[in-house]
Length: 116
Figure: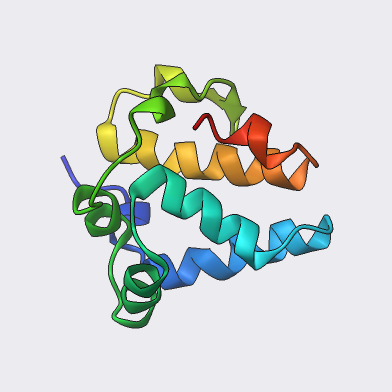
């Protein structure tokens, strides 16, 4: 089975969309970065390096230093699909990030988005 095109897309191609979505709703790049750090365990320096070197979404999640175990508590719809029902691991990780950024853009407090 062929890989989904989203897997090979560089993180740097989708990252600006996350930032733009958040900023349109009065949120910040710093908050998006905090979500990414919480979800993946990447430091700010690591994130910036990955954005600069063309790392694919698949590699970004596959090599994440510390996927947050609480991420499995993320529930709800994203793109009309229940996140918790996505079976393919990399797609589920991508959709977790999508869902968290959506929650940020909806105005939820960070304490309610990230279960620390």
